[in-house]
Image (tube, rainbow, N blue to C red):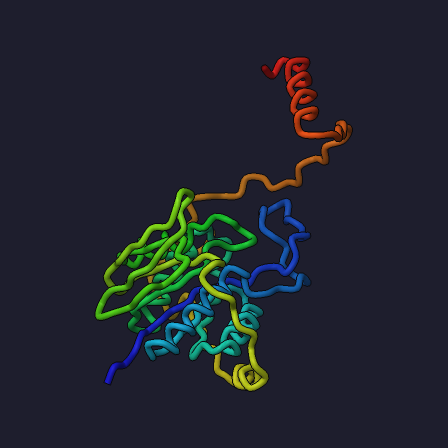
Length: 265
């Protein structure tokens, strides 16, 4: 009997709004008292993991790193159809950049059991780097494919996908285990059913702490982060300016004259 795929989906809980304050001392987002949701890009990763389970059989484990309140995001993922939820939470993990975050996630994935495929969202709305997925693959020593917009086939010990590039679409194949990051074009995330939410409410959320992972505490969190936020600020609003209306040919001529006046050209 085919046991199906062991799938791990990595998600992050992010602020529901972009109107968040920055702690001037640490340069970190002030998350206290701010409504939080699953990172929107990660919803596509969750949906694709669940679809693969429905197509090939297996289990979907969802993993996140964050404070205890990140449990809410995991329960939302369980309500969608994931089978297990794991929360990496420890003060020692705080302040991690993408490299330290991906290292911690890699250690967690090694702990929670065998895997065939890891799926991540393309990027997060609060960081917007798109680095954690590829760095996670690097820590685990497995191949990764980014910008996946369609999974074509999973057969034997390989996966075939198409991915979006700036100048076209590329078809790639990689051996399993592998990691992919997916774009929003890959699917339409489902809404959780009432029965799914009831099941998620009763489900166990398994936690992982620094003690569970072991190793040097300096390998985690802020101390292990090679990048630091030096300064975060809101750009000043641009005042003044001029609004010009008219047909395209007229606008082009006016703009051309303005550029000459300003000695840009």
